[in-house]
Image (cartoon, rainbow, N blue to C red; front, top):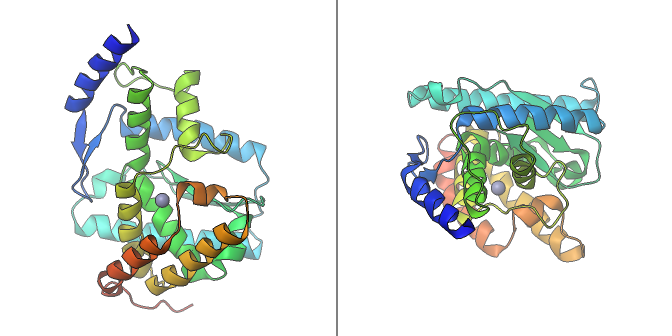
Length: 268
Ligand SMILES: [Zn+2]
């Protein structure tokens, strides 16, 4: 029965593909962007209620707000130029710094961004923070969360009927949490695909550059990440999802000339 169901879902899955407006890549879409945003909002609020949010008046929280807002503005400009404003019309951006030793950051669909204080010793400066936020926000606006959610639903044989709210279905919520990891146990996180990582690196650099941050800071940042994973026996959450190795850094160097064409240093 399970197999039959999976085959049916697969058949449905082949039909349920959408071409991403920014990347041009076809993505499996078994859930709508609205369903993703609704699920995000519920999980995001729960996460904030269970974690210590650093007061917005503190320097580092202010920095996260500042860098995040600039990246969001850059993305809005970029989408406007491409005539794609509708794609992010529902986004209500929020940027939070959360007290945690974890090296981690994420952006949920709808523009809910969280940075963990444990990331800041690795980013070390605003440009590198912009690299991380550019990357994470790209995962959201390029529909990667929705795509991973769809792939996981398919793999686990969970059928979603129409455009219904998903927040009350435990299995669906667990899959969502295994993508964003706010409450997931380490080890059950579903990794991004290589395609998604490459897209997030590519557009993340461009968005950081438009926002006035130096994209070249990506190289020393990812090098610090790589060294961290070597020196520390434990893999930080961010790295379990974002393997940093020589091939990523090589690829970033190849993407750099294009990103630099967008770069006008901001007055900091
Ligand atoms: Zn990523």
